[in-house]
Image (cartoon, rainbow, N blue to C red):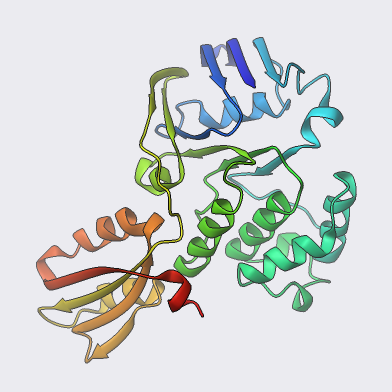
Length: 290
């Protein structure tokens, strides 16, 4: 059980958290949403014991700030902004595994599943990696631990569509065994992953609602797009989703994960004036990925 009781936090007389009360039971997958500045990241930092605050925060009855080793040893965390570490990648993975008594090879394997070849960058300083590489590595470290709680702050922000699909599959493998808190400023980014939505605004909880279960994170949709004419802007965008140009820039084909469906449709809506036809059919992911 995670419990926030009358939690408040001020920065230079500015009220960032205002009497937050929240309970999260084991097995819940909670979307923590709200605009930038709503207090989401500050609440997470309080949960991880990084800030002093008014009120109380407990995980399993223990305060994460005063019992950091005991509590945080079972928490996997993916930050919104990668830390500016100069440590080589290989050393970072070895250190991350050692502090939580996990297997570094498991983190290596998860990195490979996300499309990151750790062997080729093992000596490279972490802060010299691209944004996507850093994110994949941080996700592999968090999921490579034997965690009871995953806390993720905008976890898929720097991932390409293929890596996002794999990431959602990895989360699906943790259903039933891991409590998840996923922070985002957009509900459509995380809606397929969660069974509860908590919205924050100006440091307060303004919405707390349960949502229907999404039983299959790994659903894939085969998408065919026909455009009225070729256009360089939408071509670049579809290329970033790994879509293939089937006919002179006016017919496109690709795959979209179920968890990314709303995000993809929102992107396509920006080019509605160019769309002549869109077809989206659910396919068996197990067959497609063989």
